[in-house]
Image 1 (cartoon, one colour):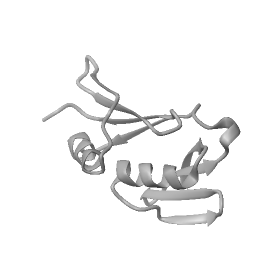
Image 2: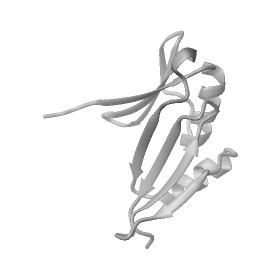
Image 3: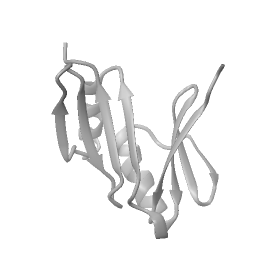
Image 4: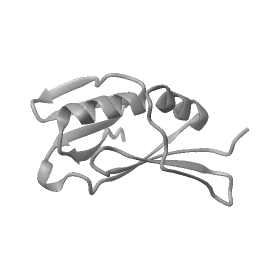
Length: 114
């Protein structure tokens, strides 16, 4: 079974969110299906999107697990985005937590440091 995942967060300012997520992810949005959404295709079947919804913005929680966390952190840093927290679990898995301009929590996790 092939599954496409569209993980979304609600935001209060679409253009500010597009700038922030583009900096975090290291790429411009892949497409805009309408005037209220922007989508980033991270892999063939994995997408992150932002949705303009000011009344419910800031309550999102999303975690991405990447093959190279250090590279993802460098990409974010090059766009001026720094994590609000970083942690390493007992099994060596690491996670960096970011907060977008609305306060949505975006985690990026990766395997143990090599």
